[in-house]
Image 1 (cartoon, helix red, strand yellow):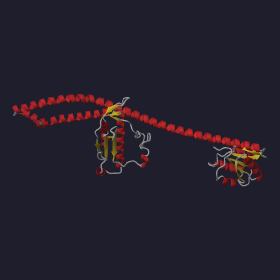
Image 2 (image 1 turned 180 degrees about the vertical axis):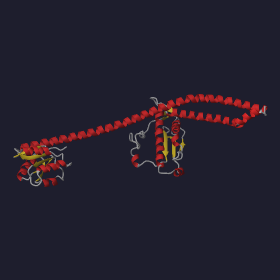
Image 3 (image 1 turned 60 degrees about the vertical axis):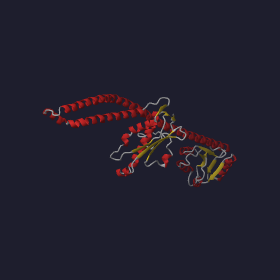
Image 4 (image 1 turned 90 degrees about the horizontal axis):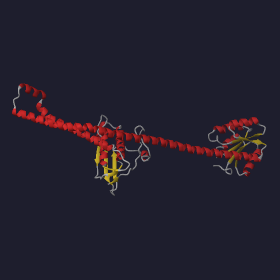
Length: 405
């Protein structure tokens, strides 16, 4: 902030007597003073450190005071400098014109030293107050802008968290609904298997004791291809049982992934959480017309159960693995199918105990193109993402404590 003693006053007047009177008065009052005798010289003078206030004569040769004022107010660098016109006491018309051009005040001729000093000090004080207010407004605007941005980001984060919570509840509900029909299908299939074994055994006995069936029965045997049926039915039963087993595995994985966290940490198996996440993402790992299968290399260490928030950790696994798949798909856009096949996409998941055996180290790595240095500098920033908001979670990297048991 400019104090009175350090303020620079530029006096522009073509009359030496006026310059001497005002310059002496201001210098004696402790102000720094600069002088210009024409408008042209004043413009050159303003290329140096800008004054804090300008005293400007109206009537000057060349560029008049009014024209100089107009130019100064049109220039961004000088438009905020207070301009006080120096004019005759009865020159009302010029006073009005000066105000219209942007002058803040006038000093009457002949000069009164006390009046000059009073008006100069007043307008310097007003300018300081204006600058202070502008700074406060700028700071407050910046604070409000940042607050609004943080609020929007927090709202997006909250919406995303609610989506993940809703997804967890939905997945848990689907898993529960799957279990009911799978349960009775599995139970019925066991009975069907037993019934069919009995019937097939009966057919074997019939063929042993009645090796020469009547033509009608022989025609029916040929029509149903009895020999093939006897060999294929057990295979169908076994295949159906395998399908039910896989459905149960999916259901268990869904429930493992979506397990609801309590308000306290719970004990759980990290590998089960990773496997359940991989199962949910399996459709994205499979081969398609654009790329071969993404290989998942699991290097699991011997881990005890840990204590933590299982559902939230599974969401972290989901984000990391989904990001790895996104990165691989992004790098594949620059390669054709054969090139990808020659250097296949891989995601490596490695788990191990730390050296002090007090924590678990989990590494998830893909062989994509990697991150730029700019992205690396921001990966721990809250809500930072390289994706569109519609696709991204904006969950930054960080640690959520899980303690080994």
